[in-house]
Length: 423
Ligand code: PA5
Image 1: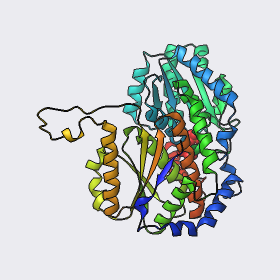
Image 2: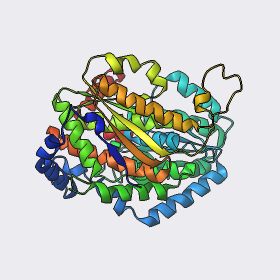
Image 3: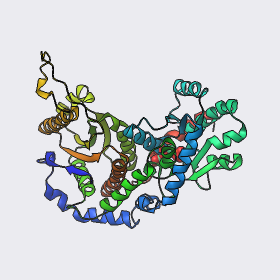
Image 4: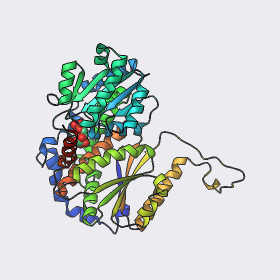
């Protein structure tokens, strides 16, 4: 099922004629992405990545996953940024109790977090997947050092070789050097796919396959997305419509995009989206500020600001058409809470009414909003959504006139930190 986009609550803020007026720019952006001729063309490997993934690799990783699960109670996934968020987002979104637990390390340097993790690992059998494209990032490198110390207490060098998998560059970086020197198994991240676009490379596929995710369905969803969202037909391509709308809203002073979902398992998909959009667009003094809420929880904290605060926000709701479970609200004879009006209804129906009400109320309060609807909370539809957002940010980045595929600003803190660390 395709992703649907509802733009009824843009009316009065943005007219369809304004979107049509930039049709030629949208078409050029699509051509530049597809033909890899635009700015940052060295990092456009993600555009046709889904269709170029070899089914043999998917089978190989699925088998790897089965082997790993035979000898591991859990998996430790070490990585940060693009080498972390897609994995966490996918597992949180799918929330499947049959998956092998995945613990994360190297996405922060909080000593208490890492200490607890190391303590927890001492009495577990585990496999470690270290993910770093550059192979030189401080946070995962330090986490790897610390976890290896726990492993040395438990496992022989030969056993460690079996239990450590490195996902990194094919030739360069310290992690590549370590893997080659120690004989660890490696999977290569393609040169032309940047970190935040890498969830469908071995960065995401290796740990997800090890956890037991149906990576074939995830990739198939992205393949469907690639086919649909690479089109230049503005009237049928919802990705183009979304990209154009957010760009035009930004031009009218709506400089913050609030992604909002009534499904709490979307929380880390929103975190992944924030990195993708923030790191791609936020440069040269430009960029839409990506923020997120999980509703209805945050309606009771951020609701006031959304309804009534500074009017520099637009909102993008994510709706899921079919939930995985059903929960019918019971009738109570005394009806003391006065909610027999929804007795016999599925809780998801009430949640959907909350979404409809919020979209309308925020619109009336001066927040233009759109709704993206996914067919189902499964791997296929998530893969489709990943591609939808990757393509959308490529298009808006080009419309904004920035290079959406570099991240020079990320280096500034590192330089200062290395100076302090004496590196
Ligand atoms: O998008 C990016 O490039 C970054 O967020 C990186 O993914 C992050 O800094 C981790 O880099 P690396 O995989 O090289 O360790």
